[in-house]
Image 1 (cartoon, helix red, strand yellow):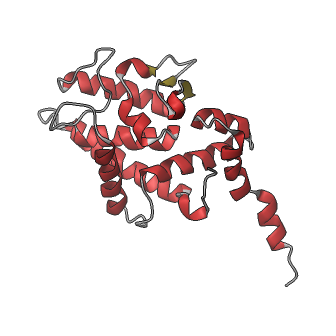
Image 2: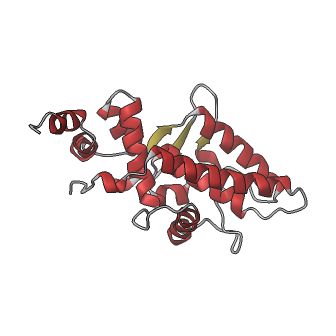
Length: 209
């Protein structure tokens, strides 16, 4: 089934920056309290950064294990082992997220969380087990409300936003977007090209006044 999206599904660059700044500042404040090892703000910033800078589905974020992080500088990436359709894929990540994940692993170790290969990357501070999708939805909603984002946005909006930003930053390389998002069909990815068409913007501005 093709995606049904419009511009209302994308965060603007300003909204993305507002969300990142808020989550980053909360995490830094928590890290500064050396005697306070509550990991929620640190973990929540990792979740939002992953969602915005990888476009992973919520289920894929929740399923990440320590072994799924490849943080070598030349090939920094994440391994999605069970994506939609039970497909495995690699997702390249940028240097800011790579550096953040390195720091996050250091924090997890200091906080007493497991960092063995099979341990979940993101855990509930209440149960010690991998976070659920419901918890990730709530974490996004709390952050979004705190910075005044419209209620229509959800954690899945981060995936659409990432796709739109990657499409533009890659100079409209639709195949790259398809690979990063894990779409089995290019037709699914094509909807982003259609919605973000520069031709449409130019055409409507040329209409008779």
